[in-house]
Length: 257
Image (cartoon, rainbow, N blue to C red; front, top):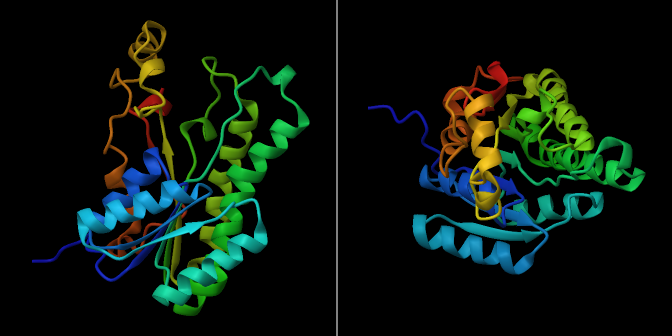
């Protein structure tokens, strides 16, 4: 019997892997047998995550402290991973930020920061991993976490820099897919909608957001823990070798209307 989503022996790098969706996706890949590298800025958080994943799933893990706005540190982080594992098969570019303010009040610094982290940060990681690991191996799976707000605008939470950066991630995904396909590297994007997390629960459960869900989302609710995992597993799988340049919304149907 064929196990389509078996990742045993592979190495998966997940950025922004200190809390929330990054940790959930890292655990999903570990559940399929992948060794996991948790990368983020907060050393104590990623060390705890790496320890928890190793204990729960019996895979090898590595915690790498890195600020993805620092090119030299990104390159050094990739070297550190390769020194231990000799390979990087999967990257999930999950690290990001979000400035919420009316467009007319957004500062230059806020706009620059958004682009530097969400868009350029994802590119820095993809570039380093492709050059040092995936192009030499003639294999790779790069998954960029964009957002449904990279596809549409919104009236609920004004965040024009976020829209711009995530829209950039969407089309950067297509550009990299076109360029790196010849190396056996697939590059795809996931566009999540609103998901429950310890940080968002109170907001999403408010009367305003509950009414918004019923109006704007065909499934009439927000995403629950684990509902992003299968999209990540699918795009990380060796079996998904003919899927590249795809933008996959996981948003309860929000962007279908």
